[in-house]
Length: 546
Image (cartoon, rainbow, N blue to C red):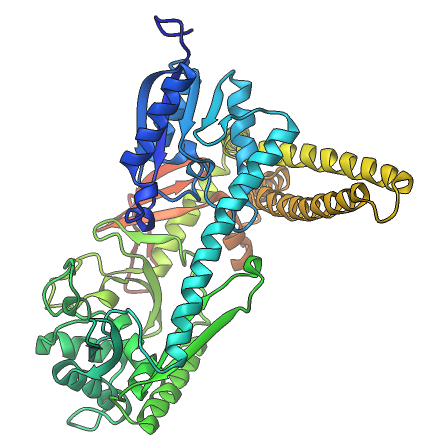
């Protein structure tokens, strides 16, 4: 169906990430101006405009406004989609994600829809155009990487010269600028610098009574003192908690940062795909707030505490990582008190009881909630026919969600076959081409390009297969669940801890707890129930039991 004037209908799609807001060439108004001019030139009638401030790493159909545009195309409300540049559809391809573009093009082509880009026009679905489109996307990513690397090289050079560059002042310091207003170094801020010294003294030497304090104890003491937090010292700080409420992660960062011993590090984390070193770092000397010996003693104490924590984490908690508080949404963690296992609300780890109120849903006996949830799982096994039907329905739902990956795999395989065919043609032509001729050089260069693309496609194929292999409800997983259900019905009640954890993982069990009640959610349904009590004799009193 076309518009009343006989023209095809088009939706405009613009995207800008937060980092691009300052880039005039990528601003939303400039993208829409270019797309409107393009639509007029191509005789397309605009029937919708959509814009996202969203990462290009997310497929367009899963972005808030991109999903609306995609739905409109699928529903027949438009015949084409227009973007400013290819990288508005997919992110700059730094790790093989340029292969997402053929999936988008082929998917819309199957629906009879067109995909346009202002600087390239209408994209075709044949292999040659798909490859050109992907090379354009790759070029956009390479241009951005080149710009970023040039900027980084300049910054690193300045740091090697002993300068501190364009950063926010770390807690305990203030920025020193030259006559042009550029940051050149740091100097100690007396007020916050004194707080840093107190943190190290309490942690290494102890408080006024000589008792060494943990990072959590230091956090509370600072909050009770009303010491300003690092966030409150920064412009644009949005307070999520009360004034001067410290988080123990802030204290841990201060205790671990070599900055406070006089060494400021500047570096970037890189990835395997960038083919650079894993960690590139340069440093500059700045005024030290604590002496070197104190800083190193703090690191030794941190290592000792971490080793102790690992030794204390050997107890088994069936619902570890799968249980949350329904009141404050904090995760529960396992704890051992007076010979009894509990799940405790982690709210207290990030807040201060008494200073910031508290969550009434503090702790739950592990023996009660674990038994309750396992009873619910066993109940699922009571009707094998229903269990099988529910598992197959959940598997189908998982398959539907994986369809884009399977489409990507199919297109990747098609592209590999196409490139292999092109390589074979070049191999056949080379023996008949005069040595040293321009034609032979061009064939060799083209063969190298094809080999590079084949290598990229092979990596992408491995990545897709790995993602498809990570699915939970495979046929084998369903058979494992069904076998356990059959065994349970035959009287095998004592599953091992590892067996239970495996089943919880396959079923993707998540538990939300409110006072006295729980909500169980898994791949095959949801269930509410009451938490059992533990009697004085240590025996479980099942809720609603006679």
